Image (cartoon, rainbow, N blue to C red):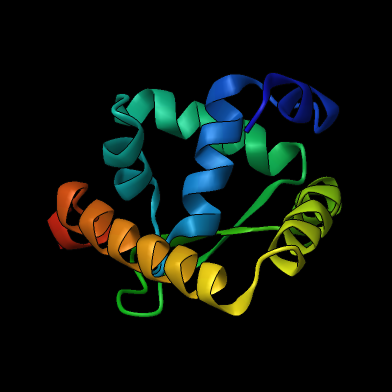
Length: 132
C-alpha cells in the first residue's frame, strides 16, 4: 500500500505490515508466527502487538488448536477502516474490468491465476514453516 494510505490509517510502517500479515493469514496467527513473518525478534513483536492491541487494531484470542497459545485477529474497526480506504481502488478496478471484452478479461484472469500460483510457490506461507 501507499505511504499515504498507511498514514491515513495512522499506522507506522511495521504496524501496517503486521496488520496486513494478520489479515492475510489463512490460519490462526500467533505472535511467534508474526515475528517470523516480519523478520523481527519476539520481544519486538510483543511490543508491536501490545501497541496494535492498545490502539484497537488487533485482538488476542485463545488459539483454537492450543489453548496455551494466543491467536491474533484484526479488529472489526480496523478491518472496516482498511476496506473503506480500499473501496475507491476496488471501484476503479471494477471500471477497468468493465472496459475489457470477454477475451481480454479471460486473458487477464488466466495471467493472474498463474501469477498467484507462482507467488505461492515462491514465498512460503509462514503458517507452514513456523514451529508448532
